[in-house]
Length: 426
Image (cartoon, rainbow, N blue to C red; front, side, top):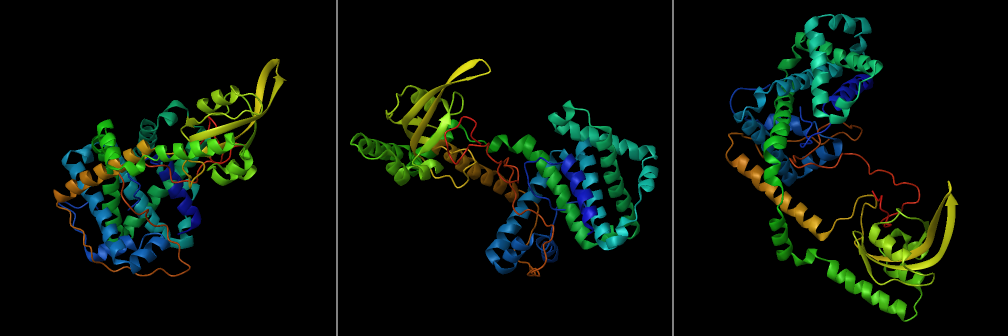
């Protein structure tokens, strides 16, 4: 597909329906239960990113897991229909828009460079039809109803016009696709079935399933009791106490920091540089400000783990007429090594909660699948992608739980590093 047209569709869909509980972007609706054939599963699998497709082509277990993901998605959508989710006016409109996007995508892919033949004047003529202008206004209204931040602000006229041009081209391309019979293609039909399922399942998961999958305090307590290996605080405190004994016995702070600290400051002997009030987590700050230069603290616990703090220097600065005392300190942190230094640390309770909720989600979904009429084959063929291919496929997996945005972790503010105990840690 022409890259410009891909951008039009991607931008329009992202603006309107960016957030969700289910991160499938599978792409009509048929009466009765959905029954996918092996050939249709092949079409779905071969629309995945190259790396996922290669795995599906070579791994039978991966194909079965993928089929189970599809089965869960369709089963939740079936239950959503049984509860009338598909009859909600805003859901109907969203399904219609997604179907239009699918057909537009196929039209642009088939037309190639000829897909550029939708001039601005055609879009202007399209929206002169009252029903089309009403569709656009309703889409904007629906988007605002789902995004409180968007609802609070007035969309600039230039941005609205740009969005109208993008959506107009989608709808015009949809019309041309139907004229060419593209809506009858098997690949279009299966993508439409799955896209509608995604919309319905997303809505139903948000309204009806999310609460069932939340972990209660009692469930987390029980999980921790049965998985004592998760509670690593005891071992970490014991290690911190041993390090503190060695410091009290006269061993070098910087040397022990390099040997035992789990913070990235270990390479600098635990040196945190200068900092003032509000730059560290409260427990750390309180202990550090209570020290005199040269003193070493007792063990201080924070959400990052167990700290041993040594105060090197104090100074007073005046800025904007205000006097502030600043500290130059170093620390040894005995905590978990975090593979993502910009993500918040997970406590044993956080880990237990995530495990409980994952298990509850699986049980809820498996129960829905067991009572559904959906049929998805486990056995189907997947062609290995060509090395140069990088198709815009479908994110694998189906998860009704909220998940982090699919983006790189935010860059830390200047001066932040690793698990440094800053109050604004990301």
